[in-house]
Image (cartoon, rainbow, N blue to C red; front, side, top):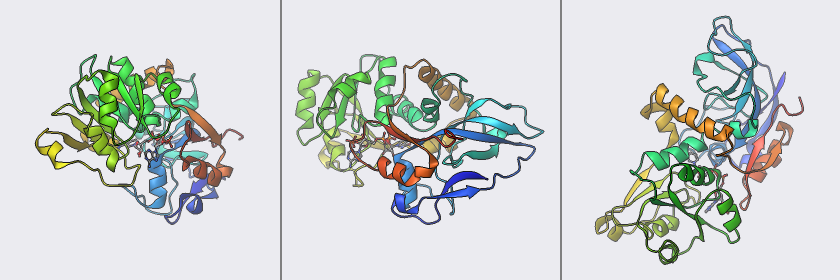
Length: 332
Ligand SMILES: NC(=O)c1ccc[n+]([C@@H]2O[C@H](COP(=O)([O-])OP(=O)(O)OC[C@H]3O[C@@H](n4cnc5c(N)ncnc54)[C@H](OP(=O)(O)O)[C@@H]3O)[C@@H](O)[C@H]2O)c1
């Protein structure tokens, strides 16, 4: 028997998660058994637990869409991975558990044996989201400016780091004072606190440089604040609903300034809009940066599965300075 987290109903996340003993199924001929090393708690997981994410699993389910692990056992027909390999656990496998069995053919992304497993565990969702936001919405040239809110989030950190690698400059909007060192430490150029006069303050900070792309994780009035910073014809890429409010955008901006609002969802890119070869190329690039230490997200705390309710409560708190990550086998 191995430990796993399960939820049978949706609701307040700490109330609906429970620790259970789970029988690990036999490994079929085309399957692999993975020991989960680490799995982050992301806002999308909290939305899933509360029943308000874009896709919901059949219940009961094990939460956790991403993680890193070591192959412990393989079926007789498996040739693409071997015992001892570190791999990116296939998306949406339910990673908040000690062991998971997956189809081996779904394992496409090898991870370096050395390197921090916690950083590797955060590869699947947020780094490629940052890549999608910077690479697929607007054509950007080195020297161009982009603006983003929730800039101290994990995605925000990856956006700053990738922007630096691609020669872009970033205006980074946060919702609280005192984040300048955090933002410059992550490679951001300018740090500003959100507010109704954001457009004027950003213009002063950049010297009026045109901004073609705004990256919005917050929605609500924060979307309009980003629009106020954009050059005419600029695009807002909304990819999050942190405020739980509808995106606000004045018709004047849509009509007279041709400001465009589009959505970006990694799940669609994985399931519909990319080939396996494209995904392997993107993940391969990102793994390289993470292994070299050029990309990474701050981690505030790690928890064993036994403390899942505390971990989820912690992850729901604002004002964190990094991720909350589960390490299911740390004490095993
Ligand atoms: N569309 C996609 O494909 C996709 C993929 C991955 C992630 N996402 C989204 O990306 C966003 C960031 O995820 P993450 O894992 O990087 O987050 P994270 O590291 O857990 O950080 C959460 C961030 O949200 C901020 N925040 C929380 N509530 C807020 C509010 N009401 N208004 C403004 N800011 C708020 C926090 O600010 P403080 O530090 O001040 O509390 C912090 O910067 C989430 O919305 C997530 O769902 C979307």
